[in-house]
Image (cartoon, rainbow, N blue to C red; front, side, top):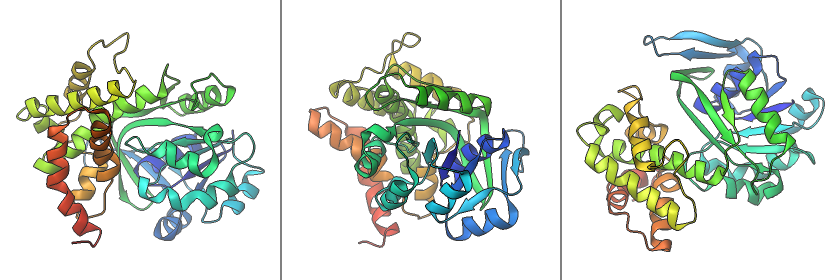
Length: 322
């Protein structure tokens, strides 16, 4: 399959390095310092589970990179079969022109962002017929441009068609991801899967940023409040028609707690790290969107409301507002 990855940060670098290392034709749409770093130094994926520096798990010496979508289409020999969009949610509206130049009639555009808003933003640019909502799960971060480190498992990516139908494109995407060592599947409901991730990642990010602690503290000393916030997300999702229970986990809250217990104790989310560094984050896309959904459905979200209120002034300062 011809593949384009937009962005080469924690998610894009992880996905792109894994996919390119298996021989798939992969192009990266990147800009600025990332573009220059990939051109001059290549792309390296590190596993930091065993130590601070990490061991190399994938290395692409001369990745196909450009800031121009048309250049990538020409270099790949045609429109990509898949486009993985791995930028922050804030960047999505500005990507519309590039996406329209990249896609052909059969191209699937896979979202990987946290929160619930990314698929709709992408659909506004290219139409729901092209969008495959995706749910990426991996602890990854940029060490420096062109160098990405993961912690823990090799990661996973669930994806599916907007309307839930089976498709050869979704099945093909699962195949290339699995071949790259990334666990992949098409869930019964990609929308429920999206909310399942929100119930873990948005809560971890919100409470972790508000208390300035990693998951190890949230699941122990702050377990009660963590549990309550997870329950808020589960209730909002249910009110919107998404049952987060599965055949293997009839209690969605207990499932999230079990997942939290299995994570590296020092793990943090990208949103949490951005807030700690004083950078603009996805606070509104990840947490504010859930609070608003709770308001719309009549579901109270007091823990998440408080976390959002505590963090909102820091977010405003990071974005240059008062």
